[in-house]
Image (cartoon, rainbow, N blue to C red; front, side, top):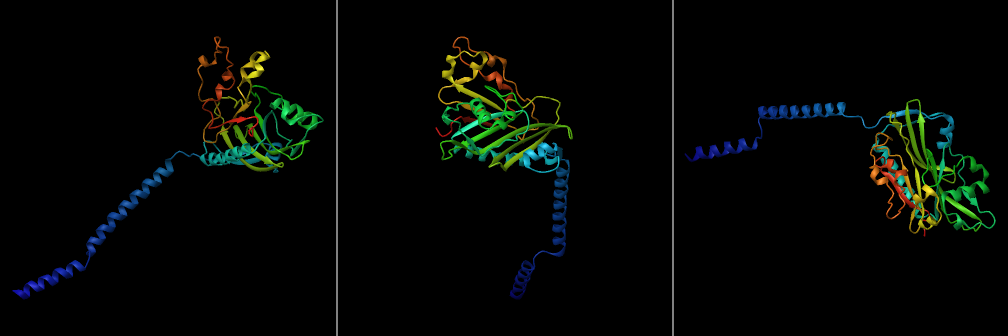
Length: 319
């Protein structure tokens, strides 16, 4: 009896150490293969039927634009069609560089354009008797620029309050170390260009330093038949003390209590259209007759919800 119990224990020990049987292994392998195959088929179906977020397209922008923007020959560029989150990441990088430039700037001037930018100076001379601090608006800076560098007069256009031009350039100045020169730290060009092949809008923001392209982002918006321009790129809020001069509707932009400042908009690669998304109620357009407060909102209310790249920039960031 003792021998039989001992033999049974040995047999039980042998069975526990022998692992799974061949049949058990085959059944487990079949189940695992079925699960993996099903997961692979499901992943493939999702990948084949998902919405295509980004598509690379070849855009005909013309030889002059390609040369002006990127200093390249040819007339076409390749970029992503909206919405493109990869391009949005690149736009974030350009935005970070912009804020870094602004943080080191002595002055910022937004100039309007209706064509290509062929004028990107490195230094700007001050004419006799002109104090750089007297350049207290984009218009005064543009006028000074046209006097000391006449070639700029055909590039930059006069504007005040709200810019009605499709394109623009942001001059970021810094101390030059000389009393008779202004130094240009960087120039940001914003260009909104209609295209035919394919039909839509090519938008780009480019940073130049020493007249060399140092960073940019671009994107293509397919035609959505909305036909709404991406305007204004700039709005300039003047000092409130200028209300002493009655200038009609221009008084609506005299809102700055201390330092003049800009509102700036850049195109957003993460949205599918440049068209108008939201409308601000017309009730907000009414100027307060009780307090006679300036209300510039009607000039830029259509920009609400159209981009995540919105900036509020003082005229003199270092002050």
